[in-house]
Length: 265
Ligand code: ATP
Image 1 (cartoon, rainbow, N blue to C red):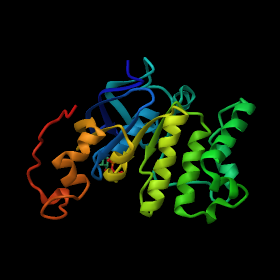
Image 2: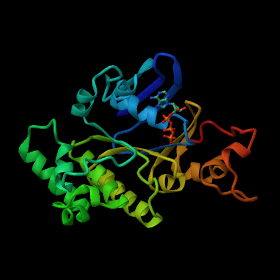
Image 3: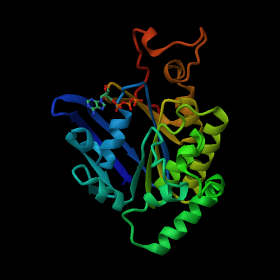
């Protein structure tokens, strides 16, 4: 059985705005999977639904189910979901700017009581992100975009996740930093066995580092398959990687989206 199963999930905001229209996806333990799609496709909403955070925006799962390690979590409180091992690293790199880097990292362990485990995980964060160790006593507000991204991933690790949900880690970062951060995320996946679900607009980076991908459009999954196959798919190249024979096309420029194959497996 898959570690995470999202079955035909429908999400509404404020009781009326239907945003997810039956999303189905699954992730096996130990895999690194990406969720691709244009602005507004519903990627962040999917992550919020899994992590129990929809209520903060007056949203709720109104149909379908979400199962983690065999148990329903779709109407559980976010704190219980974190305790089960699902940690969301939200987009936007928000940190408590007046606190130090280390204090921000420790904020990720707020609900834990195992002091030895917290200490070990802090050392683990510094092992994977040596730059954060150098900056541990620095005020977070002075950190660069790349350092902030490392910090929010590190803060997520302090929750000791089995499954990490990572929203737009590459946004606004220079390509070499995107690569550096994804290389570390891939190592965390391989060495620490943390299962990863990565939301990205940067399809190129995501498909290079992930094993498998889902593509969302208008609140639905329209395509999925192994990353290598998605990389070679003409629609993915055209809409999400900007690679076409006639030059870069935006999604809007193409009126008829030919769905070649929903399943590429
Ligand atoms: P982006 O990359 O721009 O964040 P996304 O694929 O993550 O896009 P979502 O943020 O999930 O998409 O948004 C999907 C749709 O839901 C959009 O049309 C958005 O306007 C709408 N939406 C998101 N949050 C809310 C909210 N709190 N209330 C009402 N509508 C919302």
